Image (cartoon, rainbow over all chains, first blue to last red):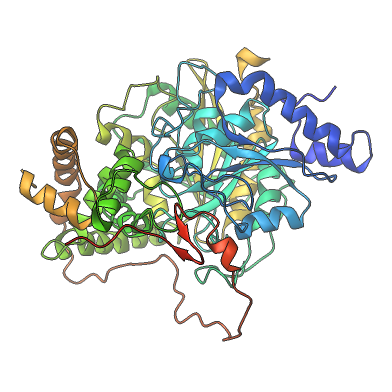
Amino acid sequence: MIDTLRLTAEGAKRLLETREISGAELFAAYLEAIGAHDEELHCYLHVCDDPGGDGIPIAVKDVIGTRGIPTTAGSKILENYVPVYDATVVERLKTHGLRVLGKTNTDEFAMGSSTENSAYGPTRNPWDTTRVPGGSGGGSAAAVSAGLAPWALGSDTGGSIKQPSALCGNVGLRPTYGTVSRYGAVAFASSLDQIGPVARTVRDCAYLYSVIARRDPRDSTTVDLPHAVELPEGGDLKGVRIGVPTELNEAEGIEPGVAAAVRAAIELCESLGAEVAECSLPLSVEYGMACYYLIAPAEASSNLARYDGVRYGYRTPNATDRLDMYKRTRDEGFGDEPKRRILVGTYALSAGYYDAYYGQAQKVRTVIKREHDAAFERFDALVCPTSPTVAFPFGARTANPLAMYLSDLLTIPSCVAGLPGLNVPCGLSDGLPVGLQLIGPQFSENTLFRVGHALEQAIGFDSVPERLR
Amino acid sequence: MAIDRDQLLHVAHLARLELRDEEVERLGAQLNDILEAVSKVSELDLDDVLPTSHPLDSVNVWGADEPQESLPVGEALANAPERDGDSFRVPPAGS
């Protein structure tokens, strides 16, 4: 009997290597778990047949292109789209023998913080099915927490890996910009988008990162890693300098239970030998949201111009001429959130407004980057909550787009700066997971894994949702 | 109000979105709230600051100019909403 709720990828690898289980048995165990729970949770938009082999199964967010397997990005406009090539990251998975279990639910075009923007209906949080799993990568995070996948790939533009991992109680890494190829992924905001791992443990997360991270000649924004990925081992934090940015830890809207769990984890860092001190990112938090919600929509309005009903995806049956076809196809094919962002972005880029909006946001981005650079002259990592709140009920933030945007208040600044961030579960508040966010300078993933692993061992968080134990 | 109905329809046209009346009302109101919130960036005096378009310092990433096999025509057309032989078929241009 394979307990998919508790099996880590590392554990699965061991069972496969010692031939205690076969690849087929392992894949079948996940299909069975999906069959038993996914009708309720709706983590998957598509479930695959076993492609054969003896590798570990993996779930893939539906914004990542998979040859011969539907890839919808959670949008009606890509309803019947079946890619004719694999994204580079999917090639990497296959090279390592990993087998795609299925494609996970996401807010449409990864725009959202709850999966409620998916054209195919929301995913439910395995800890409390009346609540959201976070987003946009709620399907990947919920699948890992509910034992419907040992690990998964996500994508993160302003928090879409880190925030759902926080709300579902698992480990998610947004890697340093440029370390993982986006070739073959559905583009949202190209100067921000990153693909990264979601896993049950920091070691699994680090291993999956080592599989996917490297330069790809087909994505000219990628670079070689300056040093190899190290799987974390130790339990102490001697010599690690940890900064606690006041603004990210005392922002308005942080729930008391979240603040308390994060504070306790910070004290734990100290007792594990880290040097902990307060610091400040005064402009990054205050101006991060405004900066992000100009840059991301501007880039989205450009990226989403490709959905024109000509070469792939949905086309309106109601068109009179070509222009009419473009406009109706896009109105009928896109949901509200992509439309809002396309409109904001088009406005911010249009003649007469460009300097005041997009140009100014790019300058604010420089300021945010500099503030973080200055902090990393004194610290190896920064800590704060990943999400201001625990998982929230369905419908709580859908009426007001700005309220939904605030879900990413604490993840956005470091994304804008291009920095890596790791979510590690650090406790419960009202029975729901609280996530700790570790932010480091560019290419500092090994440090984040080390700190995350030490905390994980010391905290002993049980990643299995209480209602499923 | 940051953006009125005519401006919204103009922007929607630029973005090739045919908004229905109900959407003009609803999205228009939301758009104003969003634009008001993001206008916060104008509070900072950043005349001397250079813009950041990209988080890495990469410049001039060159690739070797080597011919490679391209996608077969059949695969390139596999997802076409409508095709005509080896072409994508589209409605006629308007008057």
